[in-house]
Length: 163
Ligand SMILES: [Zn+2]
Image 1 (tube, rainbow, N blue to C red):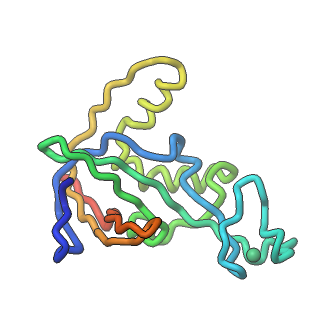
Image 2 (tube, protein in one colour; image 1 turned 60 degrees about the vertical axis):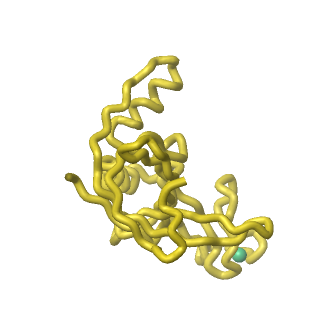
Image 3 (cartoon, helix red, strand yellow; image 1 turned 135 degrees about the vertical axis):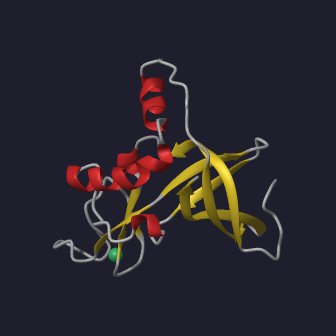
């Protein structure tokens, strides 16, 4: 696995994006209750536990993942979380229900995703679309967290630039 130096918490790397998650960009968000701080399942409109009938505590956060591949073929999964500069000053919204928010969100992520959305759309109808994404320069944050009593290294997108 690349980028494992314990003394480094930010890397610069040239790589291309080879896949992304969730499968559809309109699902790249989650909703949470700002009162109890718990995630609200997408089939719910508000936090039942807090009786939030006015959607007062309903908060949308953006989140997606990209899989990048460097020049020697090593792959790294990067999270792009709500605090990433990529989403700076974007209106937070239910992307599947707010088409103008989805357009604004897509405009930010499309330079990263290239034709991967077309590749995903093709998969659904059994059509193979070749991915032709350019190399980009990534700035990557990395940190270690504990999961099931095991230490795992995670990677997040800090910024990217065209070369
Ligand atoms: Zn709540």
